[in-house]
Image (tube, rainbow, N blue to C red; front, side, top):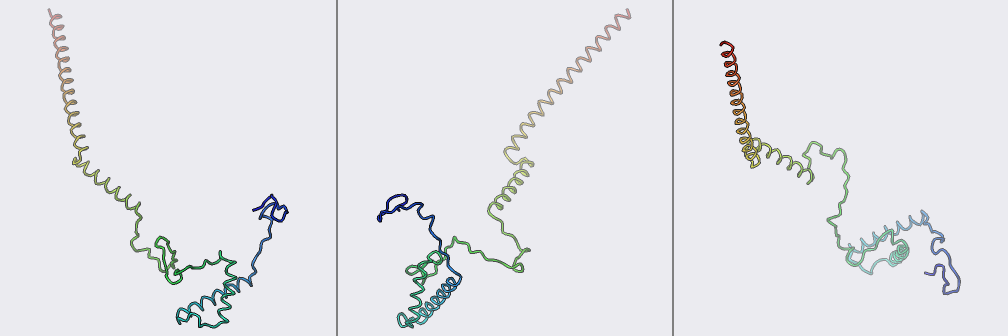
Length: 188
């Protein structure tokens, strides 16, 4: 990497890689590469089926070698399988393969599977409803404590109402007694 510094040849470079010309592949080259890959795949299948290693047609082997050289330039296009990977199909269980369904295949009337969050939300609502029924029936600890508090408050209010009634009766009797005295004093 000799950007903005003196190279081994003694010349100076500026700008690095950004000014280089880009190379584009023509559609004809792409078609040729695809056909070569298809041909190579067919040859591999024939070799696997026949079990013949080096007894194939030398012209076909030469073509496949030529196609290998062109494939090295396009490693991004297709990755080569190493070792036994070509023989063993390994599927990643975590990789979800999306399958498209036709409208006729969709089952809209069938039961819909709920997600975990939806199931938990429904369970939570049902538990809350059960608790409220038991609470209204007075079977929960909180309901029992509330009822005990309510009974105490009712007793206190009854006693307060009784005292008020007694005080009012006492005032009425005192007022009646005062009127009697006045009427007796006026009569004399």
